[in-house]
Image (cartoon, rainbow over all chains, first blue to last red):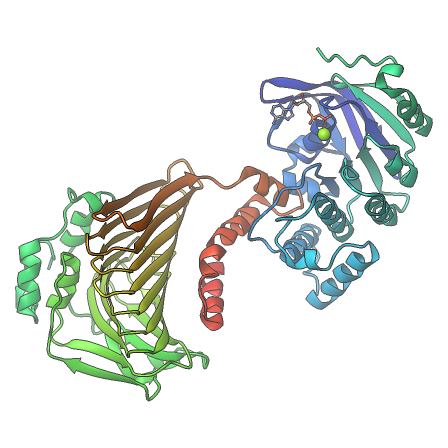
Amino acid sequence: MLKIKNLSVQIKDKIVLKGLDLDIKPGEIHALMGSNGAGKSTLVKALSGHYDCKVTDGEMIYKDKNLQELSVSDRANEGIFMSFQNPTEIPGVNNMYFLKTALNEKRAYHKLGEINIAEFLKFVKGKAKEFNVGDKMLKRNVNEGFSGGEKKKNELLQMLVLEPDLLLLDEIDSGLDVDAIKAIANGVNSLLDGKRSVLMITHYDRLLELIKPDFVHVLHDGKIVKSGDYSLALEIDEKGFEGLGINHDIS
Amino acid sequence: MTLANYDFSQSVKDQDAYKKLKEIGFPTRKTEEFREFDIDNILSNVYKLNCDKKIEVAEYIKDKNFYTLFIANGMIDFVHSDLPQCISFKTKHKNTLESSNSLYHLSEAFIEHDNILFINDNLDKPLKIVNMYDARESFLPTCLHIKLKEGCKAEVIDLFECICLDDSFVNINRVFYAEENSMLNYVKLQNLDLKSILICNYIPKISKNATFNSISIDLGARTSLNITSVLLDEIYSSFSSDGIIRLDEHQRAGNIASMEHKAEHTNSNITCKHILDDSSRALFEVKSIVKHDAKFSKTFQNSQTILLKDGARINANPKLILDTDELEASHGATTGSLNEDELYYLMSRGIDEKKSTRILINAIELQVIDKIENELVRELALKFIEG
Ligand SMILES: Nc1ncnc2c1ncn2[C@@H]1O[C@H](COP(=O)(O)OP(=O)(O)O)[C@@H](O)[C@H]1O
Ligand SMILES: [Mg+2]
């Protein structure tokens, strides 16, 4: 599904990723760990086409397409969804209108007609209820004045509506209580049909218990320095990055 | 004939206005406010003075939720209009007002009588004035007075639509009288031909404890100007004006306003949001004068501009001239571009750049539309900005 080869990414004057390789096959769940500032967010931002990320070397091949040749919106419509570490507030744009527009844009991209409004309402309200997303959030402006938890739930709701093929989850669990993490994990799991893939960034074991990764990678100084299975996450939880011999001082 | 050389004296119907026009003189390229507007060119174009082209007003589909007044090529058409009993129309002996705005006198010079629309009761439905044009290379002056009876409330919409206005200059005068304790809510919706020039000269006369609110939305025309002069000389009179100016290509539009406070407890508030693409230009030339006797007054001015391209320009000059300390006043002008993070967020959900930009622009415009209190008028304005 996704093949990243020798990827180097620069933000402003800083080279953040320095020749990163990663291969994600359909149906696989990957976890990406690493200390603050390691470049985890930069990787998922580069995949989604963030304006700050300048790819200076290497390539990202997704479904046989070179991502650099696709616009941000085309990447999304091809099935990439990045849930933001800090979702943006958009005053004046109604959440429900936003969800409907996003879905219709995706449908248009795939040459499908517009969704029936009544059906859509029923679908969204059903999903909101199923995964404990407050009904009121639908009526408000996109993320405006939302609590940290509400913002993350709104990311989930968008995922459920857009049904992406590759889920990039950037700390979707941070700042959430146990029940909220459970709701989010249930939502994500409901999408996982053996074909969709996940790359999730997290610092906590709790999310990994709920969404079991097939692979765990440690990002350090712009490269993946260690990969393993779920047991690597447990080891990190126990010993910390330094205990694994990963030096914290990033030059 | 051209206007700049005053070579229309044969056609003058109001000698007083013509005299005042000549006294004040036309603005020129050197007149501060008109620098960006190529006014010399507008005035020295050759125009036809009579446009007798018929417009099939009967074919226009009237909305039952509104009363309708048709003005076709500047001529009021009562036959096809639909007005309630409480609105009456009278032509009266000419009473040209004092104004330092020569473009106001320019239109008046061509008009023999004052056309006055009296609104004598609360309007149960908004009044929609449908201004329709089908003309080429014409000068089209129109004057209308709207008088709202004391204690009453009315919503009035001025809708500017055209079939064709190639190289024409429409110069509109609107004089409003909001009598004591009344509230007149005015909305201007303009989306004219890109080859047309529209200048609206506004004179609101606001009595004691009365309120005049205006919302103007300018999307069309090659050049569009709102020139407003307000004198607040009665206690507790209140004036507000909010605008949306959204332009692209080589369009030019702006607000020139002067608000003079002469009585205590008077309010004025003028804001405009400019969304400027390509090489468009906008002007926000606003002056508040608060005289010594106008204690406890409030006056606010704000210009907000989003520049979508490097070639677009705003010229914002909010000015306060304050002659008393006991007042509240503020003025400000901000210029920026659309929020990059908001744009990226929308695009990352599959909405392409063009549509995402539209959504964010609409969100800004919505802040103005939301000030419209009447639901029907608000919906009409919303549809208007959404095209
Ligand atoms: N917009 C930015 N401007 C400057 N530096 C940035 C910017 N975004 C990220 N960085 C830097 O890039 C590095 C990696 O950041 P990030 O990918 O957010 O790390 P992580 O998600 O692993 O905590 C950090 O050193 C951070 O300071
Ligand atoms: Mg991060």
